[in-house]
Image 1 (tube, one colour):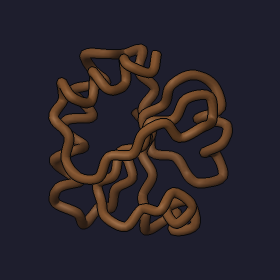
Image 2 (image 1 turned 45 degrees about the vertical axis):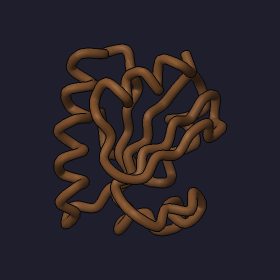
Image 3 (image 1 turned 90 degrees about the horizontal axis):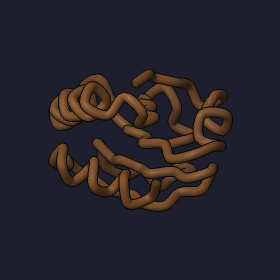
Image 4 (image 1 turned 30 degrees about the horizontal axis):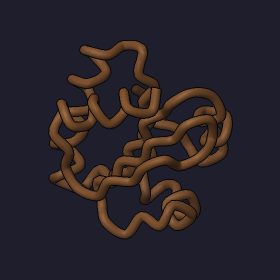
Length: 101
């Protein structure tokens, strides 16, 4: 799991399934989601997870219509497949990602 900038986004999501976590450092629920993401990554090392700070990459956040955070976007081969606003339970996130593999 790594934080990337908008300039690297296309390259990061072009192949396979990618979980994109749109967050902000000041957001309490985002911090809770980050802990869940870390657990998901630890238990599923083959998952590709990236984080986008909406304060640093406002243009990318606007492109995806991010109005509330945390927002989780599932990308497959460069195309958005699913968007979930708010906290997600770990098992729900894992099941969702696996449905696109």
